[in-house]
Image (tube, rainbow, N blue to C red; front, side, top):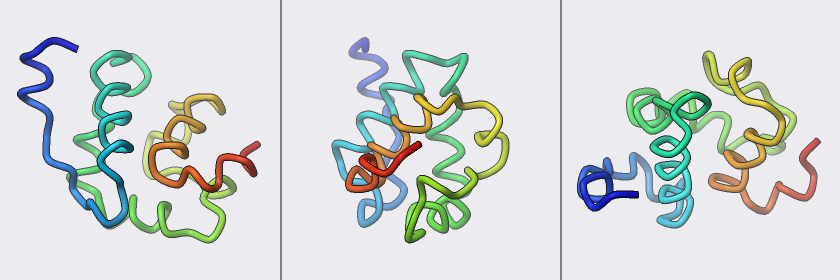
Length: 94
């Protein structure tokens, strides 16, 4: 990431649900793979209520993702999202 991208990183919308390291990973994916993850951070910020339903689910690895993300992301990319938000569930994914 460039220094400009680091400087322009948006604020974590819910530090109680997304750790600082998780937010860094989500932002890195958003910036470095815009074809797949582009707009993810903006989606999290503007739709945190819907995302929090997925994040706080008992089994998020089995739940559908919010909005277009269900169809947009591959299983591997979903694992990146899961690792960022619920790393303890990664073992049970797919």
